[in-house]
Length: 206
Image (cartoon, rainbow, N blue to C red; front, top):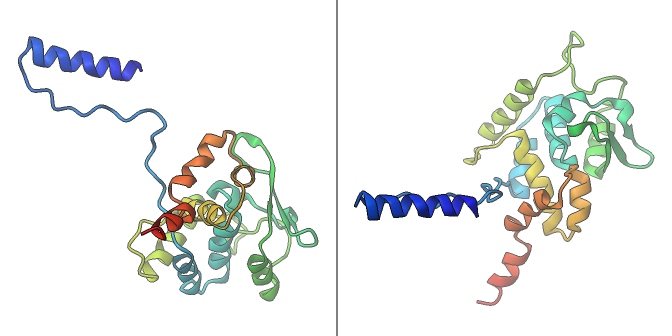
C-alpha cells in the first residue's frame, strides 16, 4: 500500500543515508479501528437497577434494547412506536435513511407498566424542551458511576453492547446491519471481533 511504501522509504533514508535508528512503527492500516467497548448483560442490567428516574431509565433501555443512536433517541416520538406490531420506526436517522427496529418485550412492558405513552417527543423537560445530547450522556455516566462500572460507558457503548449480544445470541450479521442502520456490512463486522460466541467454543477445546 501507499502507506507501507512511504514507511519503508523513510526507514531506508534514516538508516542508510542519515545512519540513524528509525524506531517508528508501521502505521495501522485504514479500517483497523479500535475495538468497541462492550458491557455484559449483568453490567447493562446494573445500569437500569441504579437509575430511579423513570425517564432516565427509559432512555438507557431504549439505547440498549433498540441499538439506536443518541441523536435518534432525543428525536424519537411516541407516534413512532407500534405496540401492536412490536416495532419502532426511526425517522430521524444518520443519512436521513429511515429504518424499523423491533420493540423488545422488556421495553414494551416497562412503558406499559409505568403508563409512559402519551404523544409527541418521548424525551422532553417539564417545560416541553427537547433533551439535548449532553443531558443523555450525563445520565449514562451517572448510571455507570452508581453501578460501579470501571469501563468508560457512553450512549454508544449500549449500542455496541446491543449488537454484540445479538451476534452472540446467533443473529445473522445482515439482520444486525439492518437494525443498526449501517450502509456497509464491513462496519457491522467489527462486532465479530468482540463477540464471545466463537471464543467460548475455542476455550472448550482446552
